[in-house]
Image (cartoon, rainbow, N blue to C red; front, side, top):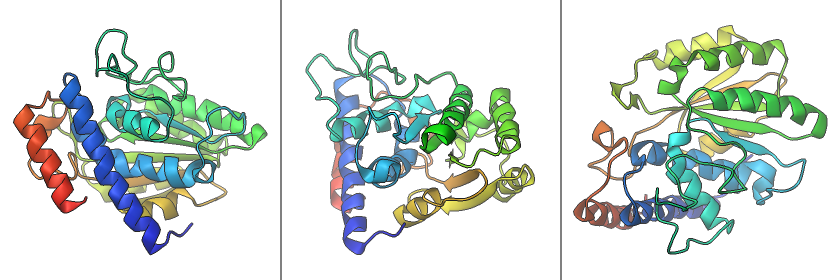
Length: 273
């Protein structure tokens, strides 16, 4: 799938708008996982606005494409996208992590029906995505799941990764947000991105390393229809878009000050990232 110059321009404007929306969620609430939400935002935008269901919001049709946010702590990115798509309006009570708010610390389908699976316990999303993809072979839909690179430490992830090629699941795309950091610091899993690619290839996957902030690369690779499962390793920047947050693990899940929010908003507006 190709995108026009005008589409690319609009997507970049959307990136900036949604990052500001995330900051406003944090401004009205407590701490949130801003670093990992900023690192994967272009990936989620590509899926929801261009790839899944041909870019048309569709959350009720049995044959709809599905997205599973396995790294559920990137909840802020999902919330602002679903809000922008008109799934709900943000009421005064819907303060991040507040009692009775739909915007909890991890996405929960009991609060937001457009979420396919409640995630937050790392490692579980890919297994659910595999089950959905098995159903999708019969019902005619594709499944996409996003994992964090730190999440690859979970044994359940590798049980699913081993099973997927054995079951010849070719309607599932696994995307890894390779931002190189986790809660404790630098990611403890394989640090050489080329070695990680070789591991997936050895299991029988089509594997591609891309710039995880480049819309053309994301859309092209995630749209491919192949006879084997796909792993897209998205090389990303934690905290992308705000200079003092980029590659700064202090902003993994921080409550921002008013000054930090103001500076971040100004930078995003000035750069139009």
